[in-house]
Length: 149
Image (tube, rainbow, N blue to C red; front, side, top):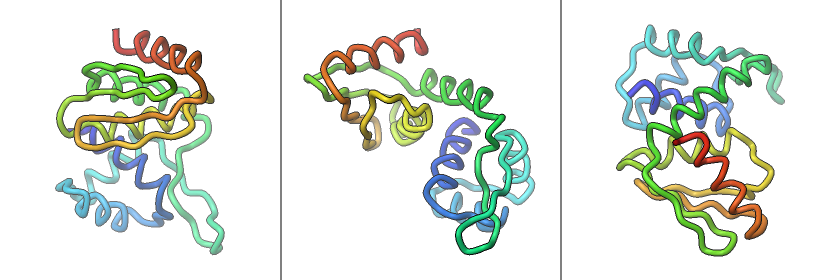
């Protein structure tokens, strides 16, 4: 549950300008997570989130830049925990996950910022990734295989 929640927090702070712990807790509650302020506070510390200036002059949560290497370990863990299988159709990569984990795994893949991945979408247990070329699809499958195996 913690891995799913952390992946959702990363997804939310990348999607919305979240300024407070209470706001983050509200977003998590709307996404089906039952959290307290203490849980959100621990998650912020665990994920090494920091506040950065936003366009409107206020502060918002973001991933601390020096935490990127530690974050990649978390992304790899989410990928490893949720992964079931993958298959390619030319430059489209379809990844099957444990039921309910596709969004978390998809967020982890997006956060890894692989140049080969143009974009991805997730359902409940399936992710579709648009890859730049067939050769790049094979490279991404190899990267994923090295993480999950």
